[in-house]
Every structure is written in structure tokens, then in C-alpha cells.
Amino acid sequence: MAHLVETMAYAGATPWHGLGNQLTRKQPIEIWQREAGMDWQILESPVHFKADAVGHLGSIHSFAEQKVLYRSDTKAPLSVVSQRYHTVQPRDDLAQL
Image (cartoon, rainbow, N blue to C red):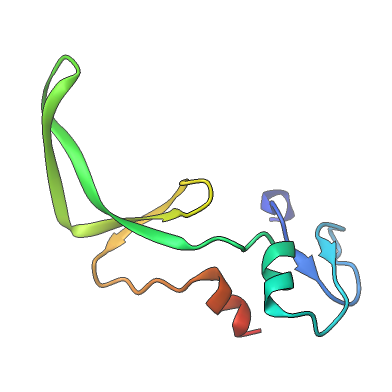
């Protein structure tokens, strides 16, 4: 799935696909976050939908059981999940490495 890689970082040997930014070992997490393209947060928004549309107008309704996850930098949607879903931020994921 290397063709889906937008940005990444690595230390040591170059990955087989040759993609990414090479870093020296023991860089601060902020450097890894920036160079790996993970310097954004996951934000949440309630799910809303338009019903009873007449032309461009319609009534707006909420779907309280679900929420939309989206990127803070591009506002690109990531997923629709239940309210029980616990979000893990990219920075927190990097800290586990």
C-alpha cells in the first residue's frame, strides 16, 4: 500500500518503497510529528443532515448517536463513528513508538 503514503518519516535503513523523510535517531517527538506529516489533530463534529429538501432549502436534523472525525489542518473527513468511540490523536500514537 505504499502508493497510499502521503508523508512519513523513518530512521535507519530506507524503506523498500523509498518514500519518506529520513531522520537521525532520538529526535524529539515534535520533529517526528512534523516530518511524518502527523502535525495535526483529530477533531469531532456532530452528524447533521438535510431532509425535506425543496430546492436548496431543507430542514437540518442531528444524528446524536454518531459523530464525524476530521483533520484540523485540511478539514478532510476521516470517519463517522459512534459517540462511544475514543479518539487517539496522531501525537499520542507517535508517543507509543
